[in-house]
Image 1 (tube, one colour):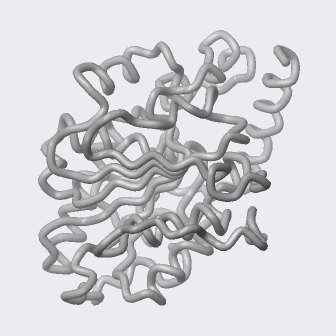
Image 2: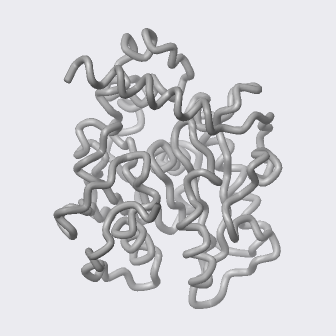
Length: 284
């Protein structure tokens, strides 16, 4: 296992570098202006106004080294078709590196803060819902805890979020692989960032927290580190719903069981009905 994980990380790094756009990010820019790939289908319609039935715009946040267009080709149109106003942010770029979600996570949280303000000003909403994958499900917790974001977030849904870090992000291993961007090492289980984020409790008062995770997560290790503790938390393991679901971390934003749970979490009265397990796993 000790040899397999570094090999996996090398493959992951090569994969991510092959599919990411190059551009320059500045604080406050809308996602469609920062990523040459553009937003996923239906997202970033700045004329969209939430309905009375669905009053919270939904912001989708990608994971480390990814982007919104790559991650949310399925979820964005699902939400739009259900009547939600959907927005995406490509955050955390370092210069012209071509990758997003790589910069200092606290700075990315500041970018999210500006983006939430843009969405609220544009839509007239009082709060937003956030759905984030991996770092995108963890980083908003910094915004909510340290940047006065709790009052602006109704529900945070994390898809395989790195809430308590991952043992895979050992700094020595990352250095050997050339993965030197701040966001990689900040997600190590024992990093100062993770310890600070979770000090005093996993949650803050006000928002609802929903964590959706897979036991086959090959990035967030152990997978249970994704889960949160708190009275305002719902933790979901997809294998408890569909035991044969074998989706891993990278493809989790295309897992139909997980997406069904997202739709339930965002509904006005979440009930989490048993998802349909035939056709489980990634949609592609």
